[in-house]
Length: 262
Image (tube, rainbow, N blue to C red):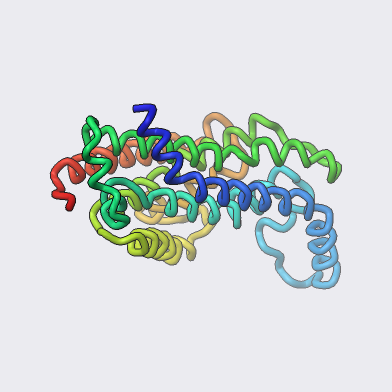
């Protein structure tokens, strides 16, 4: 099993390292641009005193923790992590079949289920690291802009992002198992996320979000609430996401065992 995990690491390390550099870079930009962003927002308020400001503007001006939540966990960092989850989802025996190396893998004294578990385990650990990377970047850099950010807050938000977003990785992995193509799973995964965003975007941050939309609002789930408390954590959504990931992983294993790879 260790050999299979190492094989999965060799398969995914480039995507993981590129994603890690990109996500840490985004965290650097969000934190270090805080003074300039605050200055720009304050100037906008002074120049447009009669314009009704966005709901988040006043809190960003006066609450650094909210600023990090809105700009990072509800912004480009979240989107970049989702893209990383899609890219890491493209792997497994079907993709080896595309590359022409599946015959060697199947000749090993390993069950197909072990290949699925090993790849999912390695990719999940990588996604967890990608989600927790700002847990080190944001608290470390915050004093340089005259603010502070709790390490526990960063870790909690990283875990929420990871658990809630596992379904994206699981869905892409299922497509990658069913289709003998390296590009189709990426296209389907990203297109599905975009379509979901189009559906839920009219209700972004709205308190009156319909129950049906709220149930599928992945972006609200993985960003977490603005004010993170034990009782405000979206426990139900996280449990559902983890359960769906488990079901997808089971389905991937069954498809891999039944498929005739040539």
